[in-house]
Image (cartoon, rainbow, N blue to C red; front, top):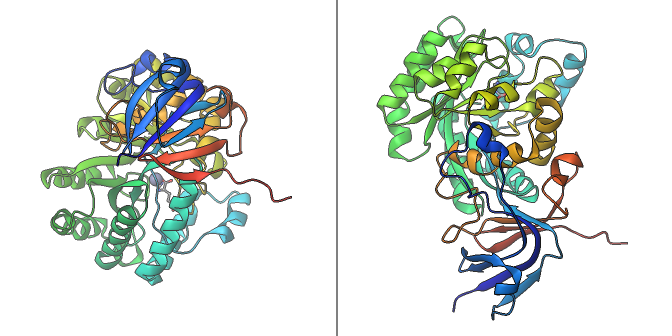
Length: 419
Ligand SMILES: N=CN[C@@H](CCC(=O)O)C(=O)O
Ligand SMILES: [Zn+2]
């Protein structure tokens, strides 16, 4: 018997499907808002989307009165470092003393401290921790998530992280897309020979493909990490092995990672906080999506926020993300990132909703599956405790989710106080 659910009396419904494909430039600013609508879910998929008065009398297994609330697609989180051991709260004091992020890394802390903890952790420990963070992401309205490795930088630990991500993706209701970030930092063993580290990581490409452990290969292109030239060679090899590629680009120093992402036809260039005029111009003419991470700039406490306005006005396609990780952005709260995008990058609410739904889905090659409420698609839907779509970035720092549906199943519901 088919399981049917009707969400009716929706105050504002964002289906995010008024534009074809990736949404870029000024199209990001136009949003179709349906008022007093209903959504019919059947066997986990969207069966119909229509005004409430057309659907409210049909017979279904469950009817949910949305009481005039906002309803949107489940959010898509396109950039996380989900699987890691330990935590780095002890580095907060260093940050407060003004020690730069790259200096902490140079002293063997930062990413390298998480590498030590991740190498020590068992697969089970990493798995439990990843599942905990996935649950929290779900509670904030995320229904599809990307997860990077990159805290091993040796064969065993990178494979361990990727296998943990695969198992988490199989067992957790959220859909998970995996990225191999073996080129995330230069470890002690490879201190003076970064090329050898890249060769070692590239030698895993065949096995990663065979075991279906990742769809993307990513690299941290940055001062003291990998150069543009090294990144180009490494990612070209990844492409030759059939991977799509991403770059942690122009985060702290403007090395030209944005241009490299465009040159390589990368699916995304991520961070782009210090992208140059030339980088922005090239990005705008390309199909590479800029994944902006304002939480990281906020959390690192210095530096400029990415020039989202210039990028969008030039015609680029933009997504946003938490960059959830134990060092530079320790939060699963994508709604907080939506507020930062508004307050610090001056993105409009209309642009922000595109950036956390359909564009974020394209950023992980799920543009045909996630980020929209559309007949035939998986019913990934969020009911919000909010009267309209402007409200989420406006009322910042808290969780506005009322109910999350993943493939038609209720995955999370706001708890009530017990007193
Ligand atoms: N910048 C490089 N990598 C991560 C940070 C990882 C960490 O600090 O553990 C990022 O995207 O911000
Ligand atoms: Zn990152």
